[in-house]
Image (cartoon, rainbow, N blue to C red; front, side):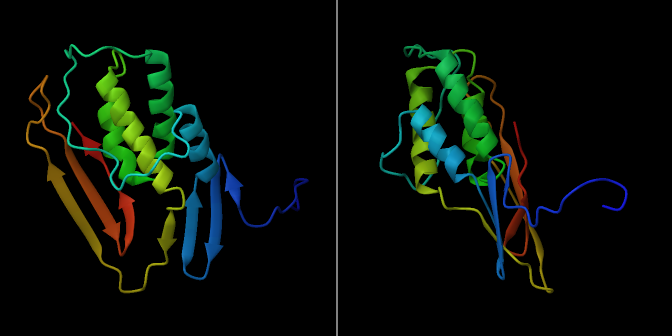
Length: 173
């Protein structure tokens, strides 16, 4: 501030569509307004929420089910991808439906709509607690053991927690 003309805008409260709130217990990061816009885009505003983002599905690229508008499908999936930054619980479901962007079918659109119904029930998620001084670092991993119908490949994922906070959640096919 001594060298350049600038002003102090206080603590961060909104950045790139992410609402930031701080309190004594931790920090809250939400994309509630953005998520509501995605629900409106998908025509799912006001629908009953689900408790899981995805059912167990075995879909193939060579499905004979009717195709849907690929532009609309891509727009929904790409919008949900940005939401994953604050809702890591969506990562696997969005990664799965992203595999079929070239030729989306009615089944895939139903899977995306289920994700949207899950999003409608998680609009207020996003609280990260302050870690106590005796915090443990814990990791978990899982694999679906060659469940991809087209390639017989597995999808593996790991989650790492620092105390109660999820800090890393990679998933790879």
